[in-house]
Image 1 (tube, rainbow, N blue to C red):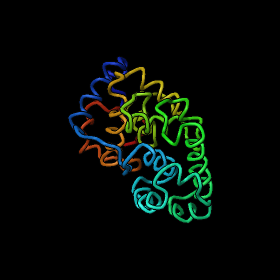
Image 2: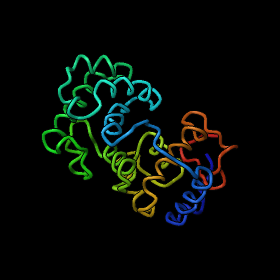
Image 3: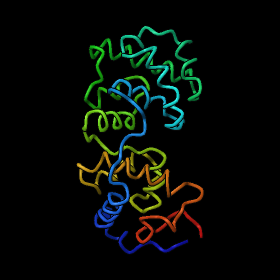
Image 4: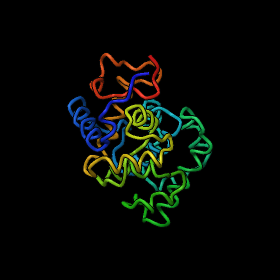
Length: 220
């Protein structure tokens, strides 16, 4: 295994270098979930659990055509929603969460997606990661760092955290990064994980972070 980079001993300095290289490599980043408004993003993010963004994007056009807003989805029959989202996996639980989320929006928020972390996480099917996605992407509110599978893997691999627990990883990243970078940092790390630092076979020779990365957990 490659020895750790000496910069790991100065994590803030190291994190700043990682951030700088990621911004150069991925200057323009965006959420991969196709959506037209906060409600659609919230529903798509719920569907993305244990599912690829590509598959979610294949399913959501039909879902949103049939149920364009929270009021419509709140009245949906579970069987119809299950049929529309079947390809995303765990479709029964996701259908319950989608309908429950919509009903809660109608009941407690006049059908609108709240711009508040606690209010979002009180909705069915919405955890901290989903809430961070919606607040950061739909409203430009940096409530935290989104820790998906790519961010989890790469944060450890780069030595930005020693944890594999998403909540602790988020705390570590929040402590290392300027708040204004929280939202786009996740997008950039996700892009890097999809294109270069792949889980089983990272393309280290083509990696913009090759000179920095200690490659923790990777055997030669």
